Length: 184
Image 1 (cartoon, rainbow, N blue to C red):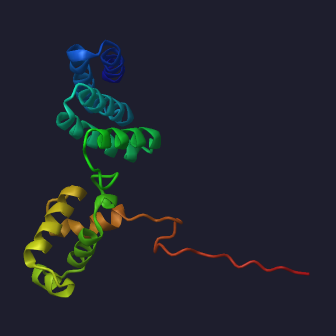
Image 2: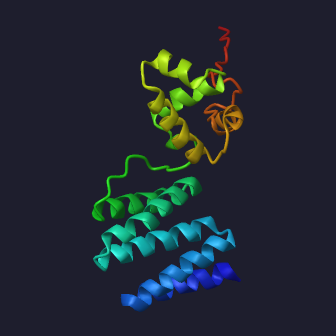
Image 3: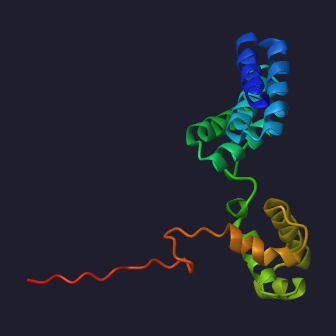
């Protein structure tokens, strides 16, 4: 029932416009967040962010657009993700990455530091190995923990393994080639 009510509120918010429409879109986003309907939640967030931008509330519209972009990306809704990205740019944001959580949201530097930490290196050892400051290592790890939704260094190896893509289905990530024999 919350899913259907959320969809109805989103539609009414789009049709009504103005302050009443914004109120309906906010309520739809809240309701859909609780319903577990991730794609519908993403749609409501993108519509809310776009409506806030059109109402000249560009700064307020950025957060629902960022969250909507992340959800759309995770649901595989590429058109919705493209729209959210375009709306974010129109709202004055400069989205660096399409994903804001998960392994794909890590920068190359964050990933490098996380992999060294997962391998058992201490923060000073990582700083020395990468020629960066200890403060930089700590900052990268802090952002990595947040993006991977983990709370400690001990959870890092499992988070990196579970989030690692396996493009061809092989456990070690290497492509397997099949040899074919052609007989004349």
